[in-house]
Image (cartoon, rainbow, N blue to C red; front, side, top):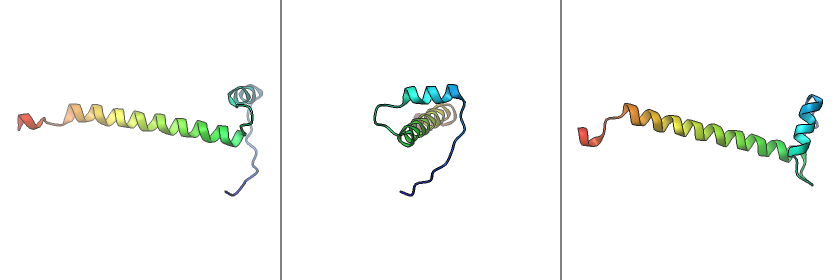
Length: 65
């Protein structure tokens, strides 16, 4: 994996919050990867829930055909 040393400006408060989330021995890169994965999973779950709700409202039951 290529390493890119980039700076991400954050407030002092946000830095403290990130530091509290980070586990001992965990890098900030690993923490950010974990947070991104959690957000992606949450978005996927929301999309699945939305599709299921739409399916229930818009589709005709096979029994009705």
